[in-house]
Image (cartoon, rainbow, N blue to C red):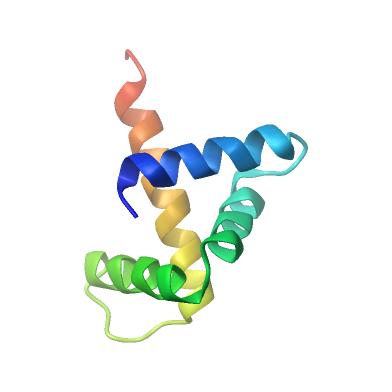
Length: 78
């Protein structure tokens, strides 16, 4: 899944569930993409953090959240 596809998936979940906070939305995205993609997200996150171990689901959620927030912060005209 590309970053663009991830952002679209995140946006769709947020539209469907406007009352959830960002971390809950990220968790829903991870559940929706399935175990293989969740494992890929976790691996990307652990590589970014230069870590060898971590909980797969939690790391995948962190990756989704980190990616979306990074893109959002880059888009802010500060």
